Length: 82
Image (cartoon, rainbow, N blue to C red):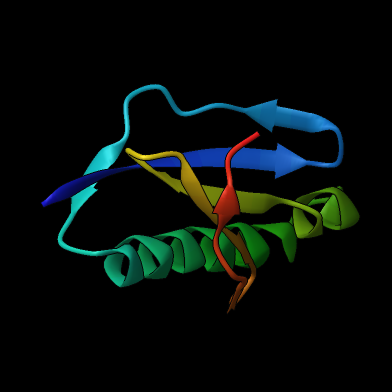
């Protein structure tokens, strides 16, 4: 099992996960991030600030600092954490 961190990004604002969660692989971690974003989207459908929640991106960061961005159901390629 590896430790992955889920940093929430909305435009210029970022909430950094300092605790993390353990998953067997990156794919499992990104699938969890996708589930969370889908949940945000469902909640946004009944919330007055829909457009705000649609802009949230989850950056799945591993222990080495590699990051995969997950935006709704579209993970992107790895890049170094900045």
